[in-house]
Image (tube, rainbow, N blue to C red; front, side, top):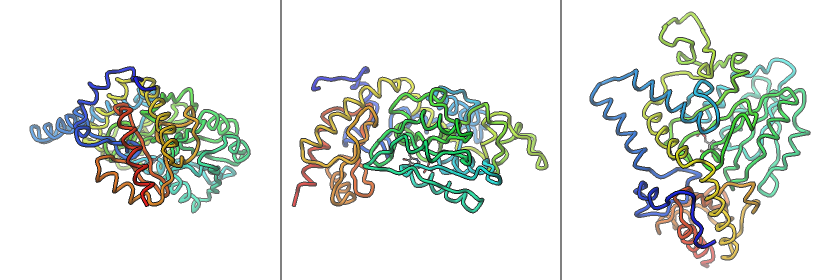
Length: 384
Ligand SMILES: Cc1ncc(COP(=O)(O)O)c(C=O)c1O
């Protein structure tokens, strides 16, 4: 494996990430490092604000371009995308569009959900929802459990594509097909997979798909995107709404809810403009490199993490099947937050969650970076 290279020029890309001069970032599952492109994008907004005072048309055009860039990543069109400031908000808007007053009150949720998404579904219990759980066993979920959990009383099936704890990838197409077969809708959280593997909404067959921007999409907090399958959009009327959800937001007609015919009916208030600038720049990097090439390098890095962790006596969390996981690899440690702090102090940035330390490399990571992170983690974990 030594001598393996990604299908792009690693050196060129590494020079575009100033943080690499001083650190080994291995926390992409939490926050991506800054690039020259994302910094320049933020500065473009600040310059526009400074020189024109307000350039509303250009700012709205940037939001539309960010939607288009997100759409490109998932094989959709800009009209299928709504913008939010977090995945939690996107899920809340979806929840508010569900009709829970009839027979279909079931919401099937995976236990691997990032808590915020599960919280949104639990909050629907006040509206009559019944939440049931697809269990996590040994760090992964058996896709067959959805077959029995989903039935003709299910309104929505919510699954994360990648498990935030250890990078386990669920079979989203199978879950969405089961939901569709039972007449239920499907919601997929791709925050931990988008930017790490090719994702195509049509191939997956999901009704809703959401992601924020600050992890593998190389962006910042404060912006998230929601895909809504165009065939269902006009049947949905989210009560979490606002003027940007209208067919013509600039009609300024307080007495009319003229629903936009596209996914922008899920938009609500003034969008996060500076975040749109930065997010587009980050997503352009991913689209330029291509998720397939990134995935190929992630598999090399992921195998090195798994084998290298084992050979150093570290305990892996979850499956070692790289075909069903992202490059995010989690090791069980005695005190994850203390280990994170100690690693940071020595120039390696991991991410602690509960009982694990997550090592989440990305397209710019070298095998030497992986070895350095593993050496340090093993040293700290084996110290008495
Ligand atoms: C899979 C996943 N979903 C959602 C979130 C958070 O979403 P929000 O944008 O609501 O903070 C995270 C992590 O921050 C995550 O890993």
